[in-house]
Amino acid sequence: MSDDSTPLVVPDEEKSPESPEVEEETPEVPEEKEEETVVPEEEIPGLVDNLMEEIIQTYYDLGKEFNWDNINGNPADFEVLKPELRKYASEIMTQGHLKEITPFFYTPRDGTFIPSRNFDIRYTILEKNTPNKIVISTIGLEDYISPPETVYYTLIKEDDKWVLDDWKRVGVEEEPLPYHVGGIEGFQGIIMGK
Figure 1 (cartoon, rainbow, N blue to C red):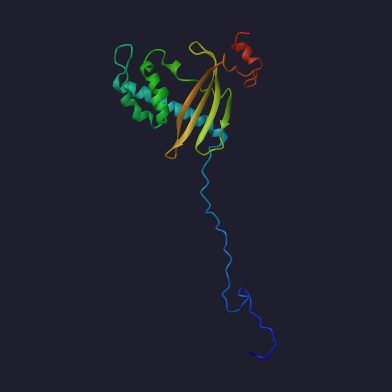
Figure 2 (cartoon, rainbow, N blue to C red; figure 1 turned 180 degrees about the vertical axis):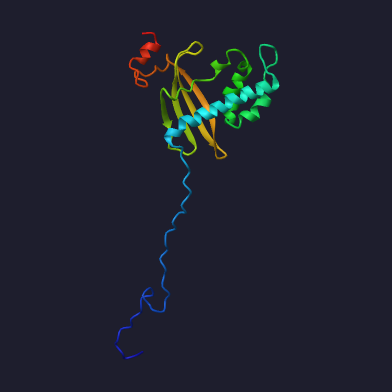
């Protein structure tokens, strides 16, 4: 034993000059992802209209090429149409609405199976701030072959291109047209015969 009464001081390990400094971990900064392009609002009606035009043109072009005519007993072959329609429509749309209208398309009233696209009268963008889905509605005026209706179009992005995924036609009995449309007061009353 030692007679020295000096207290023994044990150095703090963290503050000891011999111990290595502990580096503070820097939080990882997430990599900036390329911002996906959202279609500008003013371009959406044109996008829908172009897809619908391409679909209709596909029906007409293939109908002419294969001489499809439901009245004269040469109906359309959907298996020939399908791969061409898939360029502009999703699988669900192609196997759904487009397949349904194919047996009736090559008749004098084929236009009644395609919904209205009156984007110059009125349209409402219901879902636009997503880079992968767009929902837009428009109204269809009554004419000699179609009743008045609201039409909802849904577009989705597949393989970096927009395709039509659905259309929904809603009659005025279920969803009345707005009273004020495109600056024409009393519009609904005119359509409804009031």
